[in-house]
Image 1 (cartoon, one colour):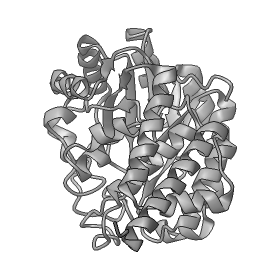
Image 2 (cartoon, one colour):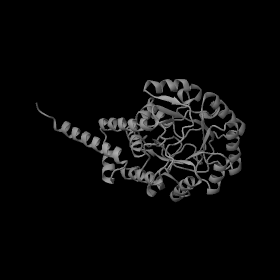
Image 3 (cartoon, rainbow, N blue to C red):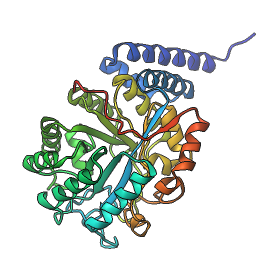
Image 4 (tube, one colour):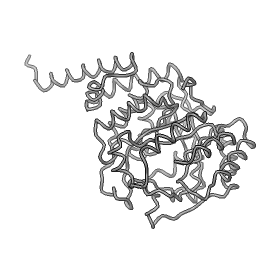
Length: 364
């Protein structure tokens, strides 16, 4: 029987990918050259093997639990002008809104009745919400629901603000570093924004005692294997409790409107790689992943993710928080449809978990 040389080469790549995966799982890191080699492999069999190992590692620590967080997008005003973001300051077509405190409390009350025990307050960097205003909202939520965790995803602020919000009861903070390459950062942000400051903020968050999350987009304009490697090395240094990894998706009113979306394959691969690097990390299957592919979130779970964030925001504002085009805003993305989401998770062998779901990376 004759063998096809191309098939033999493919088989050797797959074998090599499996060996690199085994080593990554055992050592939780790889040398630079081997990390790059693994990231550049596009064989589906390699992704399947990575995902299989990622699932095994996640289940070792979290079993079949998939934690859910109630996402509340409380403002789409933003002082920043990031080139990739649909609610950037320079986008004049956005219908801006701010939720009133009572509207936010209504969201958390509804979420609590549905079983949510973590609420994520996400917004653009809206200076209307001063340190004191947001602190009062956090304090009020914790008083109403003392058994719940409050996560903030609210961008860059001063060290004192982070400390104050922590004292008011905030438990976690998500701040994507976006990229660990200073050159790449400059491609994605205007000059007024600082690569150094973003890192400083993440350090302040850890020092304040938050369960801290970083992360980046896959396929963002200008991203290379070298920048992805830098991201992995930065996360090794930071040791975050959470990592937000999702695909870049273009938005039609941004400078990157014509850029292609990030790769589903690469996003899933990086989720699996991060699970093997950080076995105890909290790793969301993001809304962007669900937007990129109708089964994207399920695929993310099967690649090692263990968090999903259904939307608790009022229906009247969901369409206005458009970081990217074609965002999923109804159906399973609505917290009111959580039963359907639970059904989807059961279909792939997992269970929605309503616990607070704190990070097991307590040593960080």
